[in-house]
Amino acid sequence: MTKLYEKTEQIRKEIQQACLRTGRNHEDITTIAVTKQVSSKRAIEVIDSGIIDLGENRPEGLLEKQADIQQPDLNWHFIGNVQSRKVKDIINEIDYLHSLDRLSLAKEIQKRASKTVNCFVQVNVSEEQSKSGLTVEEVEEFVQQLKQYDKIQVVGLMTMAPFTEDQEVIRSVFRSLRKLRDELSSKKLKHAPCTLLSMGMSNDYVIAIEEGATHVRIGTALVGTESEGEE
Ligand SMILES: *Cc1c(COP(=O)(O)O)cnc(C)c1O
Image (cartoon, rainbow, N blue to C red; front, side, top):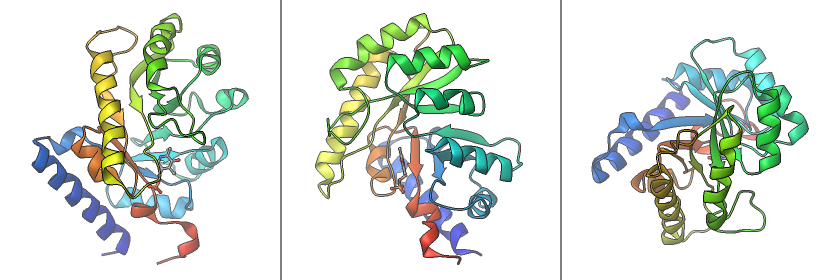
């Protein structure tokens, strides 16, 4: 068994335990391997360990991985900020966009997409300057405005927790996002079912699952970083 396979198993176990604790079904949780810091070779190893969802945060990284990894039945997630001029390069190559945060981006997607794009609206719950995303207060109006773009389907909300050791701060951020998701999904908007929650990374995915995450985005804890070298 490779070390990577063990890591995947370990994470799978922790996810299952978090689900057991909170009465959730682990099949409702998608683990996205964030491969932005590793080679295609490493990404293929993680696929071999049973992961079928991959996340990249730069257009170049996404296209490079896709060229190298010729496997069908993978789901590609774009999780980074995307400049409007780069939309055309990636928008028809991905299954989910996790970083919809402005109308100008929505407009560009409408122009360039050849089919409906599943989008998460990115929310900056903690309102840190360094993070992109809408404030909690801005989200509802933004989602309503997206109705004019029929290529956009708002499948859920995404956030990144602040960098802090304080688990309760992290938990409260995830809880706020879930509450916002619940409010939006209860409106039953045709263009915005908004049932999914993309939250939780290497350091906080267990808390995220306890608070309702449906998609966790795990990089370093799963695939490591290239600087760690080959194993
Ligand atoms: C890099 C990244 C991740 C993964 O982070 P890790 O801490 O390595 O798990 C998740 N989400 C986004 C948006 C990222 O940019």
